[in-house]
Amino acid sequence: MIAIGRCIKAGFNCSGVEITNSRYDAVIDCGKDKLLRIQIKGTGIGSLSFTGGGRSGQQISRIVKQRTYKYTKEDCDLILGIDSNNGDCYIIPIRDIRNFGTTKALSKLQKYKENWKLLQEMV
Image (cartoon, rainbow, N blue to C red; front, top):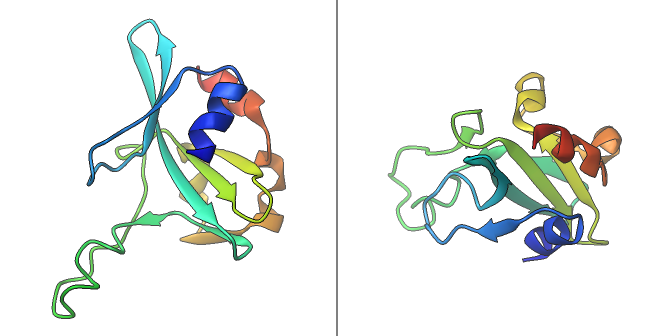
């Protein structure tokens, strides 16, 4: 809810997605029949993960095949990271995480911190 509220406050029409196993959590209506798919990732440990699927049954059955995957442009258009310690937003176009590992320290993501201009460029 914080991420969606921050998007709206920044001037974007944003709504949450209510599909439990969707690969994105929210959409921004850009008009002209275009939606941006947003994967929201929260963190309180100083690094941001670019993976999903870790909770897809692993906690229920230990014999289930690993379902963790790194997000790609087929999954979403951007990662919106939220630092739960202070509410800072990190707006990261999905194309930029290609060269990242599966996690990255927030200290190495400073060019994305509160950089709503990146989101405006995508709209």
